[in-house]
Amino acid sequence: MLKCKWAVAAAVLLLAAGGATAQAQDKQPPLRTGVDGTFAPHAFPKLGGGTQGFNIDLFTEVAKRMHRDITIDAVSFSTLIPGMESGRYDFVAAPVTVTKERAENMLFTAGYLWTAFQFGIKKGSAPLKGWADLKGKAVAVNKGTPYETLSKKMGQEIGFEVQAYDTQPDAIQAVLSGRAYATLVGNTSVLYAASKNPQFVADLELKDTRAHWAAPVPKNNPKLRAQLQDALDCMKKDGSLVKLSEKWFGRTPPPDALERTITPGYGVPGMPGYDPTPHDLHCG
Image (cartoon, rainbow, N blue to C red; front, side, top):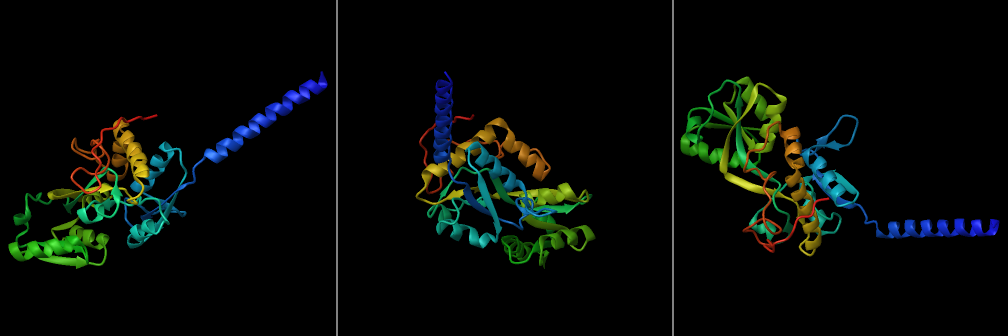
């Protein structure tokens, strides 16, 4: 009888060990990705070490829904796409603007945020209705950015001064101190700054500059693109992407926000690499 009990116990142990071995073999390696670690509120240093931000929270949750661990490097943006192309990263977690040129060389998920140029002004200033309202005034921008290029072009046409600063916080300070009437920068940066400073207000968004922010993967990995987008779409469907947006940008996304919009197929409609094939969304 004792021998029989030992035999049963040994069999149970062998089955458990076999199951554990099978699970270990089935477990996929961590997703490897990176962000620009100085781009608040998307990814930036936190007190005590590490990196925080919208994109850190977003892709940590995406990996969880894919049943994968994730390793996120905080590096310079200029190294991210080459890092993916060389095989160091599986995809790029930093917000990447979808352009035709980029979409010809890599696969993008559907967009999860709109990026657009937006003005920020001092609280109490008259809201801007268009570029013409800046005539005779000054606009502060971050030096060497597309915002500086566009502002200088429009400034010459309309007649306003453009002040270029080394950092975006310096440009915002110019507005708060009265040296400039407005600053022009990306919409999420304006919203984040406004959520942190009650004297700074997010103002006119230039809708004609809107573009998709999405996650790129190598061109030869449509399976990973589909897995990432399915997780993102499920976050749109259950409202968790909207909640993340509210947390980091301090406002509820409007009805046409990409945080709410599930597009058909995989990728960005109208861009190279878009796959319009219908598919069912299965959210656990």
